[in-house]
Every structure is written in C-alpha cells, then in structure tokens.
Amino acid sequence: MNFRKAQGKEDPEINLIPFIDVLLVILIFLMVTTTYSRFTELQITLPTADAEKSQEKPSQIEIGIDAQGRYKINNEAVSFLDAATLAGDLKKAAQAVGKDGASDPVIIINADRSATHQSVIDVLEAARIAGLAKVTFAAQASSGSK
Image (cartoon, rainbow, N blue to C red; front, side, top):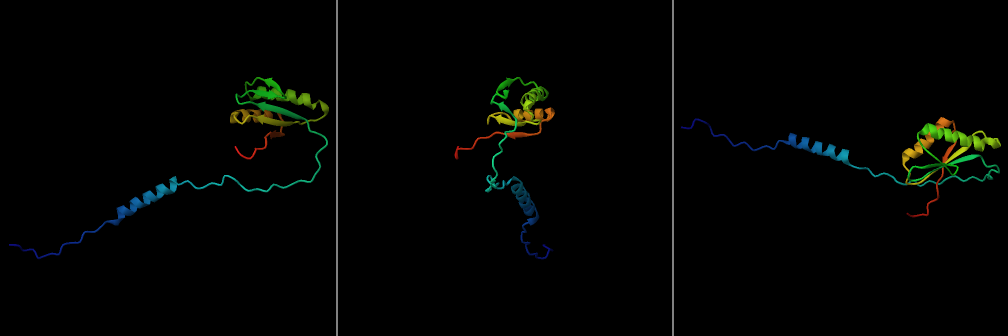
C-alpha cells in the first residue's frame, strides 16, 4: 500500500551563484592581465629661436664612455675605481680648463649607445661630488631609420 499522495516531480534548477562567482574571477583575471596600448611617440613641434649664437664658448669638459665602461676626460684615459676618484679627476680637469677665468665648466657626457646605465650614473655622481652642476649629454641626429 502506498500512502503517499502523488507528488509532482520537481523541476531541476541551475544554481547561478557559483557560475557568477567563476565569471567574476575570470573578469578580474582579464582586467589585471590586459595590456593597454601605450603611445610610443609624441608629435611635438619644438619652438624656434631667432637669437644669435653666443660669441664666447663656455669652458667645457668632455667625458667619453665606451661600450666596455672605460672613461676618458678630455681625450685622456682615466682609471675608474669609484665615483670619488672620478670626481677628483673631474676637479683636476675643471682647474685645467678654468684657468681662462671660467668658474663652472659644462660637462659633456659622450656615452656609447652600448655603455651601461651605471657608467653614466657614475659620471653624474662624480660631477655632483666635484660640485659641477652644469651637465649635458651629447647625441647625434638619427639618420631617419634604423
């Protein structure tokens, strides 16, 4: 004997909460790993100057750095131990070019394109230690394409 009343079969349900959780995790993963396009070039129109060139050339110290990390100050090779010794060599060069009355020479850094970043930073640190504040970098104009 069956005392149970006839019950209708329950329809199966799809539980959407775990599905939504998985989709949110995938969405967060995609947002974190997406790379955004970056502008590699800026179109800049540089201003022009109509001023005449200066007749007097400031005193300057040229520092060359080759790809192997060797240094030259005014085309004379110097040995590099640390930034303090290079600063001493820079002070000597500043005194040599400062004999004509210029007090603060301009340091021009001519670094090879394969020179390490650290070697250029060492020159900047040596200039700071030597008290020489006017520093610039030499570059050549590109030929248009590589």
